[in-house]
Image 1 (cartoon, rainbow, N blue to C red):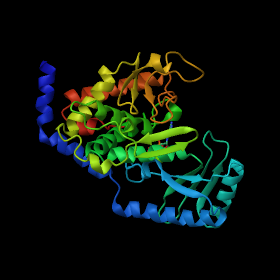
Image 2: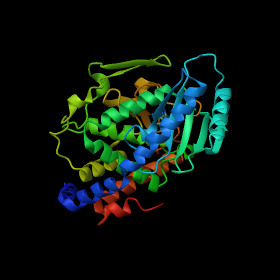
Image 3: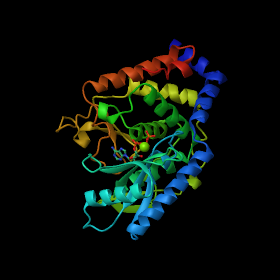
Length: 335
Ligand code: ATP
Ligand code: MG
């Protein structure tokens, strides 16, 4: 109880909150940058439609889900409905077209787990990855963007958490830590679980948007403009939420049994998901259910070494929020 009182006192201090908000503001991309990305995207659209008039181009990932910090790469998805296409051929052809249009560093990575074309735009220095027919990612991008419009604290919290994860080296799936997408889902889930709740569960509400992608029904309430003010009964500040977020992942989450689920706005058990043992490379040491591909655990990349790293980082962050005189600096110190 002593600790709790101590914490509430310090979190009442406005400066800590102001400092977190200042960090958030410094990470938000400038209008100018967003405009350049749009321009770049329109140029790509033009080139693509010449070769594939039926195809559509979508932005996804952080440049479209509103969780992109300044200078992020652009993720683009080329959607071609024709079932007969050969993916590698399309990507090689695309790389060809871009190369002859003076893009720099064009590379077709046709053997990667997710095959892509990588390129750089010489004037702005924008880097871009183009994948093929990854429409589920386009839809989950929309879900994240819709959540972000309900309460600004989601965007603030997620920016801080992503910034922390990048600074501390725990935002790399190839090293067994978590993707940005996973961290944003952790933030959404966390805000759904506050009391009073700061975010609703859109997939449990009446459907206003529905699409079937790769045999998966994606349906939820997307008229988020009607949900402005949803979380206003909860007065928690961003500093309090950052504290509580790290405290949850450091000391409260039940790693042995719990699965966090944005889809249901609740915690499920590993048992009901049948995520209790290792199958192949999926170890389920930290369980984050994908909102649409519900058999997909975003924590499956985490192994017995990286789970330790992750949990120690959560504990470090929670302890800094509790005791450090200047958490806004210490939290983000490079590892
Ligand atoms: P960053 O700012 O770090 O680039 P990002 O939002 O672009 O963040 P990434 O983790 O690079 O996040 O992923 C890009 C997009 O790809 C996500 O927004 C999501 O739509 C999709 N995605 C990434 N990982 C997965 C996954 N494991 N399962 C399903 N979709 C994923
Ligand atoms: Mg990205």
